[in-house]
Amino acid sequence: MLYESGESFMKAAGIICEYNPFHIGHAEHIERTRRALGDCAIVCCMSGNFVQRGELAVFAKHARAEAAVLCGADLVVELPPPHALSSAERFARSGVRMLDALRVCEYISFGSESGNLESLKAAARALDTERAGEIIRRELAKGMPYAGARTAAALEILADGAPRPDAPNDMLGVEYLRAIAAERSAMTPLAVRRGSARGGDGSPSASALRAELTAGRAGWERFVPPPAAEIFRREIVAGRAPVPAEGCEAAALSRLRSLGREAYLSLPDSTDGAGERLLRFALREPTLRAVAEGAKTKRYVMSRLKRMIMCACLGITSRDADEPPRYIRVLAANGAGRALLREIKARAGVPVITKPASAKRLPREALAQFVKTAAATDYYVLAYPDERARRGGQEWTTSARIIDTEQ
Image (cartoon, rainbow, N blue to C red):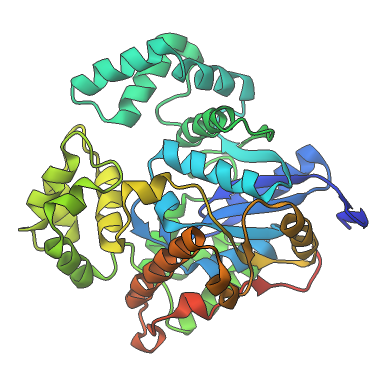
């Protein structure tokens, strides 16, 4: 048991994740976290129905959260769309803010190609120096995207000690460390070494799994823990999956063409002309891919443009993305997670929602965030394969998935 008595509880570790979809590499990360820290609660802050690549998640958020809890997590809470659809820097900071808002996580665990926490800390410190800012501005002036400019700064300052550009988990880990410092978080970081996309942990990349799923091939099942595979098969049979990454294309194009210039200028990451350029191509291209491909330049990379497109479709502004979490939406929990939830409700600085009906009693700013997420869910379900599953209002009727079995 994680809890001994009363209000005393063992340590909890937070993981910021997407689980799109959950696979054996994710289960191994959870297991290695427990192995490193001893018996502890695992709290996942997971992107909801939209992910950082600017796409729709292949399975709905409650199903992915349920799979995670059946495979080792104790509690899963949602990282809302305005924060999930963000650059690596903003994504990391929003996730750290959410875990801190719970006020129970002593640790934050993340995957790492190198597993070298001291090296990652050095890179995080280097990127927050004045010299790094100068290098980033210099590279941006050459037309380099921000992520590339940031990598160039780390390489120039640290040389061989910088994370490799082809190590995305290390680069995101650096952003977690920067966010911990910026937020003055008390969480202790843990870098869990993982293999390459098809390497050391025996798992394929999540993108390879998504390709298998959307193609209707059964090969994905061998890379997913059996309990998670059962949940995903249930979703497929029910006509709720797989959700195509660029679903709802007609609705999206209609939305893009109906927006005015000011709406594009208010999108996250719309500065330096990106909003203007996206508007130009959104008004004339026949597909979402063509819109993004047309607007793409060396500086305006595809992932940034896809996030902007999705934010435009969902009515998400830069102000929304900068807002701190105003509530905590629980997606799934087991017995240990429910015990932890009691502690969270006593400690958290924001309301905790397990049943959506309680959202109607949220304070004004928190309710506005929930309403925007509910509207995003209404958009997401339009991409379900079975039209009978596309009813509106599902955010207001879907409660947290509670799993009774103990880990």
